[in-house]
Image 1 (cartoon, rainbow, N blue to C red):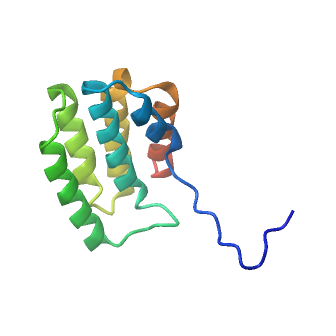
Image 2: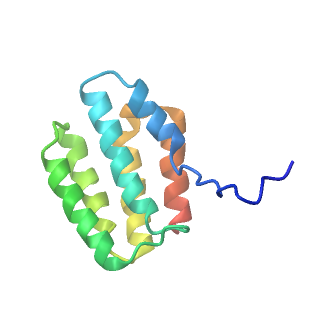
Length: 129
């Protein structure tokens, strides 16, 4: 079945599993970490098509994310990898961002479910690592 000529193109959501996990996670630390991982992953996804955001915008988004992350009640073991991954998104070096997402995935493993972890792994691979 073909879509009508006036239909809008669909805009696929890049991280449905991670977003669903944030919604299902228990209030408190688990949800805070999952939400922070989601926000950082969305920043990293900004380098990929169809977004491919310009450097200036990525720098502003990374700075705002850093401020937001420092205001969150996050476990100390996960705070540094989250900040490193967020700050890496200001760079155009996709391999650096990929490595930061991989490191975040390892540190956040106990806070994420299978689909969430797989989405972070997939994102890191699409970024070049």
